[in-house]
Length: 75
Image 1 (tube, rainbow, N blue to C red):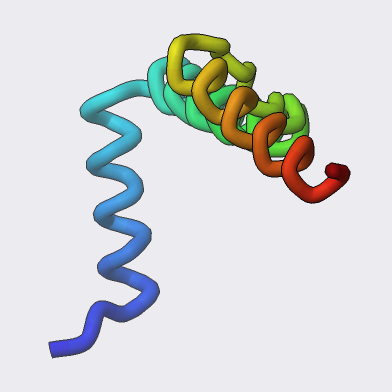
Image 2 (cartoon, helix red, strand yellow):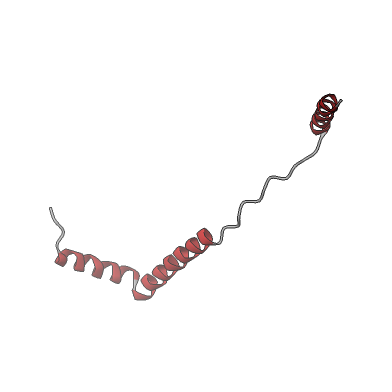
């Protein structure tokens, strides 16, 4: 079962009668705005920010260990 050009024209006419010309153009305009917004969002992405370093007790222990190892090697 193939859909020919005549059937497509009939389907389009039925859609036009049901929704009206204004409603169809409004819907297509909203669809176009959505696509533009999506493309703009894809190109305007902010570069990834580096992770912020949070200092805590584990950092203090690490720095003490590295100091002791460097002190031993320099002596």
